[in-house]
Image 1 (spheres, rainbow, N blue to C red):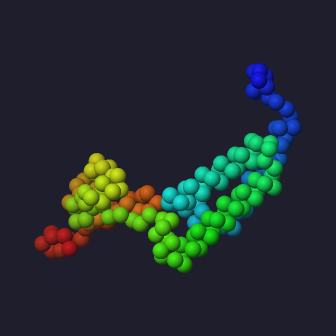
Image 2: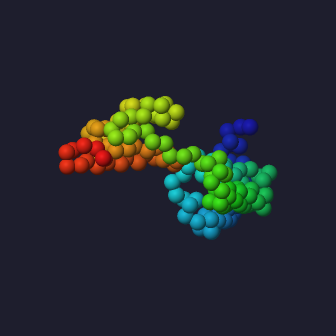
Image 3: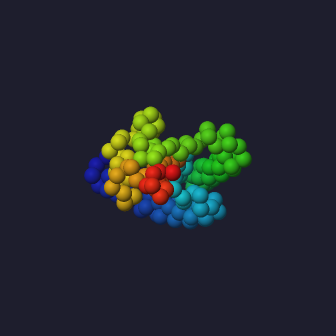
Length: 168
């Protein structure tokens, strides 16, 4: 392949990309609207995998002339239906939900890091301190809990003090 072929092969390839890309884009927008807000919410690991698969499928539809639009749309529909089925099963079955989604992990309680939980979650003490600072606190002793949520974000819960300034 020479330089000119690497930069431009044919107008038909460009026209195909424009037509297929536009149709696929419209299909994805409609599909995301139909599938609900959950698809666009903070992603847990399972949702991230489906999102990456959708993007990969879209790229293949756009750039591979060997994949017809109907085949590509079928692939997108399949991924969306599988995502819907897994989320529907997760709502109906706690056991299935635990299988496909991670549970939140308590990393700090009453100002004290839970080292075993931190080790299992692969969170360092420095990262925990950063989370506390990001929450606007200057020391861990003022924090009631830090939770690593299933979507990878951290929740910081302030501790409540009684009239003797003791954590309750």
